[in-house]
Length: 371
Image 1 (cartoon, helix red, strand yellow):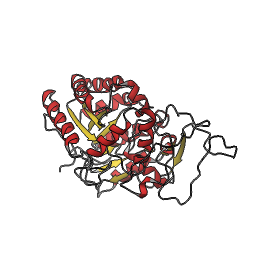
Image 2: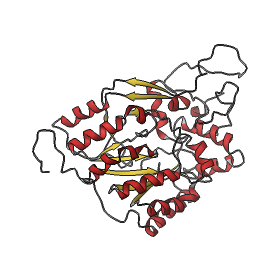
Image 3: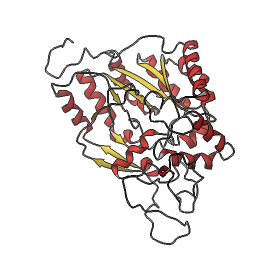
Image 4: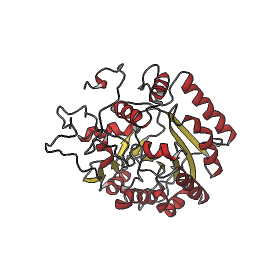
């Protein structure tokens, strides 16, 4: 089969059976295929499900690959993502969200953006030590750091390795401000620490909610917590004094964009004070696997959804232009934008001007600093 990425104008076609032993749908996984890594010349594939050759993809369990990273804080050059620096203790994400833009980054590690992204999780065991070293550098002029800017820092691996907790402890010690985003209720394990940081205006959190439809969530974000549990995160932490917001991302026309009002209303009622959203875009290998997923799960409306996404990006399903790539353009994207603006006003979201406090930053042993 020709790779549709070879022709950016080509329309994908429904794919062959997924990588189960008998071609079955892989429950608990978002991607159903391993897309080709654009950096690798060769790849191993199984063309016939009845083949008796030795096959290396029979184990569908998640594996953790411990890595000794060289750095943990990365400068973010993209001007439209709302962050200056980010740090990611885990590469790959077991949540398995089919639309996740971070999937493409897994190819830099030699893996696929598809199933590999969900089941081969790279664990940066030395992340806390690297962060401490970074913050001790006298050249660091404190600005907020996002945790995470790529994969979810509270994905299931966090329960085992607790790297996010350790990174927050370092930030709290230095009074380093942090912005966070998650869709995992495991964040509540760190309620005590988040509350302490909130009292110093060092923390701001977005909880991602994409749908109240459990049938949709189970296939679109298979290893995430329910929307009800995500509202619980907002409620418990806002009651504890933590600034909480809701991320509606991505909004997918024909699947979940009609839920925008309900999500924003529920988030506001549970203590959210700010919000953000993105419009679906399918960049890189995500274009292929999302198409495969869409036609396998929603064959009755797959054509419609695909065309609606194209209508939001000038006839394509992706747009790399800063400023428009995550908002889309055209009538469909404009309707989503207008709804977002309207419901922000109705439910009192984004009504206040608020900033994290970087003036408290100090290195251990130093006296208070003035900026």
